[in-house]
Amino acid sequence: MPTLPDGLQLRAISESEIPNFVRAIDLGFGNSTPDSRIEAETRIIEPDRSFAVFDGEQIVGTIGAQTLPISLPGGGTGTCGGIAYVTVKPSHRRRGILTAMMTNQLAQSRERGETFSMLWASEALIYGRFGFGVATATQNASIQKVDARFRRDVVDAPGTLKMMSGKAALPHMQHVWNEAMRIWAGMLERREHWWEFKIADPEHERHGATDRYRVVYLNGEVPEGYVVYRIQPDTLELAVEELVWVTEDAHKGLWEYLLGVDLVKTISYWNMTADDPLQWLVDDARRLRRVELDGMWLRLIDVKAALESRTYSADGELIIKINDEFCPWNEATYRLTVESGKASVAEVGAAADLSLNADALGAAYLGGVSFSTLEAAMRVESSSIDRLALADAMFRTERLPWCPEEI
Ligand SMILES: CC(C)(COP(=O)(O)OP(=O)(O)OC[C@H]1O[C@@H](n2cnc3c(N)ncnc32)[C@H](O)[C@@H]1OP(=O)(O)O)[C@@H](O)C(=O)NCCC(=O)NCCS
Image (cartoon, rainbow, N blue to C red; front, side, top):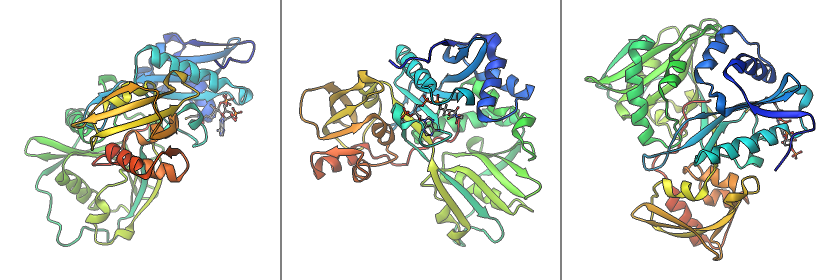
């Protein structure tokens, strides 16, 4: 178990320490801390899951987890701790503080009986060593709005669009989000306090842009999608923060709306799904530029429970060996048996069909990348092409996984 450098102490924070905790986080990221940020974070910080490393009185390291169940292939959810607030004071870096904090955080997740841990990474080199793999991609998309339009044969979406205040939009957004969780694996369940955090629109989040606009797509009375966006007046950029939809009509209706907002030059969206149909709806797909980056990083805290919690696209039996130095309780060879899409898992002593590290399993688990691709990148060893093909067929999902929010 990695230990902290001498003289440092790691412990959970108390509620009264939240302001100092938030200031320490902002120092670590090089940001200032307006009071409105402390208020906002106080809504969602879970003190018993938030830890600080103290050098005397001073906080020199921070980490925290949120209880955020995650949607899985097949429409179910898994228990998950979403890790955030990871910082180490510049004066104390590269002495193993993050390693000690992460060890503690994952052990706590395990004690709570959680199956998964997830996070968003500020830099791609940090978290692979801790067994996290890139489970969802984000497509940073931008569209030059001038002349961007749908193909001529695309018929208008039949529903209605309503611009609403945060309060009025909230129940519609909650409905759409919960429905979307059954379609996309990788989404995080939002409880009441999380929605409050999302609906609040504090000044410090605007960065010179307008406050948030919210438009809901309704099929009769039923909400089927929504978009949340701001406009940056200097650049006339419309920045989509969230666009969630559960029917093709809603997707089409919301994009039709966005492409029709007057005076806007560019529409940007930081997190389009990698298989979003928009490029096939517009007449000139080159107007849509996309840069793909890592999205949500997933780590299996309990490999057996995780393999049993999702459904599979093909039946079959696979022997999978997992190497997991950072969470050694997972190191084993597992027999995954899938019948009618449902799995049972047992530890076995047999020779493995596939052998991989925990981070590669985190990447492949939701179906975001195939085992064949990982094998080509020397992240998976397989006993034969057939077993690799079977693994691909079993883990494949109809839609690519998606995590529409960064925590
Ligand atoms: C990222 C950060 C928390 C690392 O903390 P740290 O205490 O220095 O990390 P550790 O000393 O435990 O490092 C563990 C290992 O990760 C490596 N590592 C840590 N941060 C790294 C980075 N940003 N890039 C590449 N490698 C990194 C270390 O070199 C070390 O490798 P080694 O075991 O081979 O020597 C710290 O640099 C930081 O606060 N950065 C700014 C805020 C930030 O980006 N936070 C992450 C938010 S998602």
